[in-house]
Length: 420
Image 1 (tube, rainbow, N blue to C red):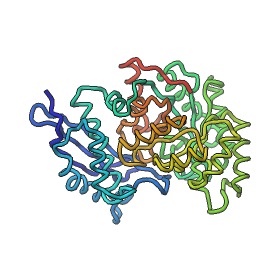
Image 2: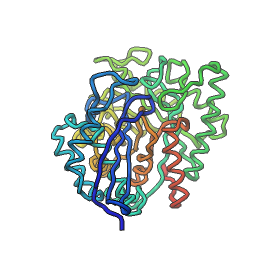
Image 3: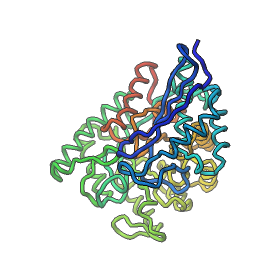
Image 4: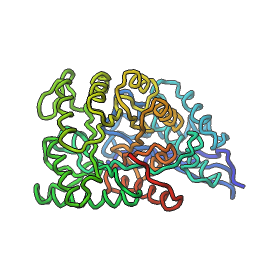
């Protein structure tokens, strides 16, 4: 029989998809021949909300960014001493212990990256120790038994902080709303992606098909309208008109200047609402994320009321229970973007998702721009039964690892694709 008690916890520095250091945690449960080993790698964001849990980084520069040796040391010394001997299946107990051990509202003492690495590795250890698929282990924690594959939101044009162009809005995504299966959805996305590559190459030159942080193309365009026209052309040429809709992540906090928004032209909040409404009327946009600054609950609510589409809260809520409650009470959004590293433990992320469901919001599990080959969020999206995932483009290994894991889950367990 395998052992369930944690016998070793170790962390190291590894690289994320931008070449920056991040934390990997390895947990061993049991001893000798009955031991199991599991690991997890923590992602990192570029466009981050100011209310996110703190990613602990060193002061000195190493590699292309600041190192995470302090977070690694906190795992190897402070955290490991406390969790060794605990049952790896006791997710809430482990997470609660680390939250108490840190003792700060934003996990700034030990680092959300240190705590999250242990939290996710523990869930994987429980999966290995019980010989149970990870999505079923996490599903038990979240008390969900309805496992469905998520509709993928595929980022194919990058702007904002994810690209070096003058396009202010950050992500333009394809949403396969009429796919027969997850495999069918990925096929549609892949074919449209390559069609888009050909169109961009023809219009802007072969040098314009370089990709941004999340694997989408980054042509030198300066307006959302031009990006959406390119998507329309690609979808039509690929033969998926009507089957693929569009989504936008504006990441508006990145182009907010205190009193106005700069989208290539200066707009007040009311003008920006009109701007978005124009895009929604002109193009098949079904979802809009972070359309306003992270403190502007009121403008979020007004756009949600006027648009009738999915309004996704990311920087506004940062997977934080208190901010979700505020957004719910203000009627600011109808979908939560769930990022485990915004809050720092798996248990807290699940609580955030359940609060959103209880409030009749949708939930979209999301990657980060600084991603890794770890595919945990693929299983998480299935375990929650949320029906939506944002995993980046269908290119670059740190993105395709999530798509590939979902393809495996579809084949191995006969799971069905959710409806959007």
